Image (cartoon, rainbow, N blue to C red; front, side, top):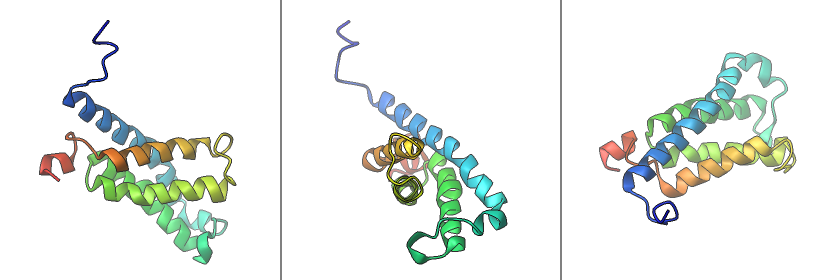
Amino acid sequence: MKKLLSTQYPGWAFNISMFLLRAGLGLLMIPHGYDKLVHFATYKKDFLNFLGMGGTISLALTVFAEFFCSIFLIMGLFSRLTVIPLIINMVVVIFQAHNGDIFGDGEHGSLFLIGYLAILLCGPGKASVDGIMGK
């Protein structure tokens, strides 16, 4: 019982946890980006015009974040740098697309945002390309 309530944990548990968090968030985000990538021409007409950049550029940045950054995140390649576009994307999803409704329609975006912030703060762990390269 004492081990169950302990606040200490082995290093391997942290590394596996970060791997599961990275892989899980990446795998769950890829279908969103892939759908936008495949149907780019359809989405660009009605896509959110963020900061006056236009729907096409906003959609391209979203596809980059949701699809390509998620692939890098799963591998653990440049993980802290990779989550920055994903964090920005989720903030836009929550506050622009869902009007700040973090407990209603924006709930999924909020969950992704929390996970991405955890990766930004903690790093990818040793079970990643970054960890193997010693960054």
